[in-house]
Image 1: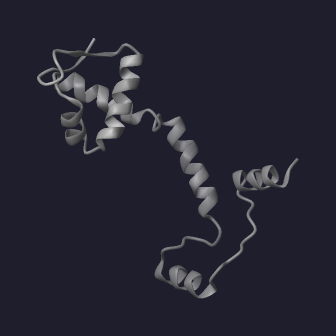
Image 2 (image 1 turned 90 degrees about the vertical axis):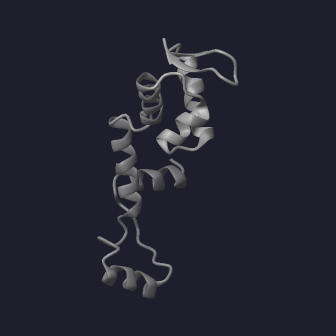
Length: 118
């Protein structure tokens, strides 16, 4: 087992050696209530990532785009991005995934057409 894989395993199980870079800043944030407990950040991030995977958080964007098209058909990517308050590039990627899954179709010409659920 390499040193890196051993370190990764420690993070996954919440066993972390604390190495404070600036004790004064650490103390300040602890007293301000911004830190729940010392050295828990990595473990909390990993736990949150696992929760997101279980709850479908990874596909949440694709689902929201799909539901948006379902509710309001004939929208272009820019309009969908504005309604969802999501970057245009992100919406374009999600539209591409939905097209590959054969769930949506673009009807019409680029200037006046829009996306529809199949």
